[in-house]
Length: 67
Image (cartoon, rainbow, N blue to C red; front, top):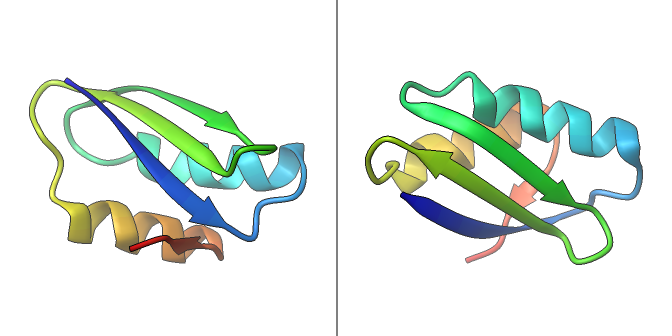
C-alpha cells in the first residue's frame, strides 16, 4: 500500500531524516520518501497504517500532520 501525507514545518534534509526515521519505525512500513519542498511524505506499507500512529510518529519528530 502507498499513502501520502502532508506534513508542516519541514525545511531541510535533517527535518526529512527525522520524519523518515520515526515513520519508518512503525510496524509494516517498508519505505518512506520525503519531499521537503512539497511537505509530502509518501509511505509504502504492508497494510493501511493507522493515521493516529502516523500522526504520533510525525509529532515525535517535531512536526505536524495536516488534517
